[in-house]
Length: 420
Image 1 (spheres, rainbow, N blue to C red):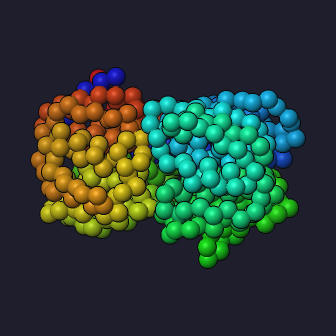
Image 2 (cartoon, rainbow, N blue to C red):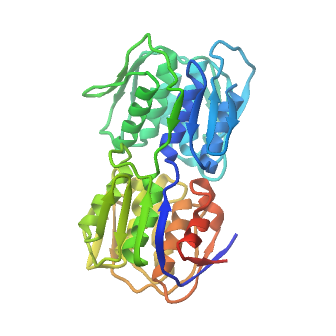
C-alpha cells in the first residue's frame, strides 16, 4: 500500500498506544498463572496478535471486551501433540515463546514471516539444547522444530546480541522450576530486562539480579494479579514528541506515558531536552512545543527503536547529530541503519554512516517517494518527516505500521495531518 502525505502541521493531544514490550510479557505471564487475568489494553498490534495466537495454540484461552482481554491459563499438565506457533514478523514473540513452550514441555514447529528467520537466534537455541530441548532447523532458523522439556540449571548466553534471549529464559524459568542465567558478554538493552523483571514481580515471580546475570529461585509459581493495566508505549509515543518539537504549530501533548517507567525508550524525553526541545510534563502527559534544536551525541546501545525518529529530529538540529553504537539496528525488521539513511536521503536529508556511527546534518527536506522496507518504524518516521517537507511524501509499504501501531495514520489525521 502507498500512502501520500501532503505538507501539514500537527497540533493537539494524543494518547500513546499500549506498550508492546509490556503487553508481550503480560500475556505470557498470564498464560502461566494460577487463574485468569484481565489485561486492560485498548489496541492490539500484529506483533501482539502473534503472541496471542501462539499462546492460543499452546492451550491458553482469550476473551475480549471493549478495552481489555481476559487470559485463561494454559493447563501446565496437559499433554498435547505437536503444534505450530506462527510468530509472523515478531522477534519478541519468537524469542519469548521458544523457551516458554519448551518449559511447558510442548513439541512445537515455529514459523514466521519476512526477515524473522534471518534474525539472530543461535545462542538461544544452544542454551535450550544444553538443557534438555532438541531444536532443529535447516537453512534459516525458521521453520524450526522443538522437542523435549526444558529443565533448570545454569544458562550461559551472550548479553550483547539480544536482550530478548534473556527475557525468554526468565519467563521460561518461572515455569521450569527456577535457574540461573549468566551473561558471557556485557549486557545491551538492559532496560528491556528491567521490564521483564518488573512484570515477573507483578505475577509473583522473584528474579534476582547478580553480578553476572539473573537468578530465579526454585519453588515459585505464577500468581495472577487478577487485573493489570498496560502503560503507554514510549517507543511509539516518541513519534508524537518529535512531531511536537519539529512539526507543530503550537504544541503536541502525548498522554499515558508513565513518569516512573522501566521502558528504555523513555529516554526520548531526556534526549530531546538535551537537543533543546521545549518539554513539560504533567503526571503521565508530556507536552512538546516547536523548538530550536541543536546537534548532540547520542548513545544508541539501549534505544535502537527510537533512532529512526531521532534522526528525523536531527535534520532540524543546528550542526551535526552523532548517533554512536548503532550496530544492533542492522538486525531489526530491516537494516535500520541503511533504511533510515535511505529514507532521509530520499527526502533531501544529509546522512552518512559507517559500521558503528551515523551522522545527520541539518537539512532542508523537500519530499519525494520512499519505502518503509516493511519496517514499521521507518514508515512512521517518514510520516513525521513529511511535516518538514515542501511537497508530498509518498511512502511505499506504508501498511508496515500495523506491526506495532495499527491506528497511527488515524491519529496522524486527528492531529491535523493530511494523507490519502
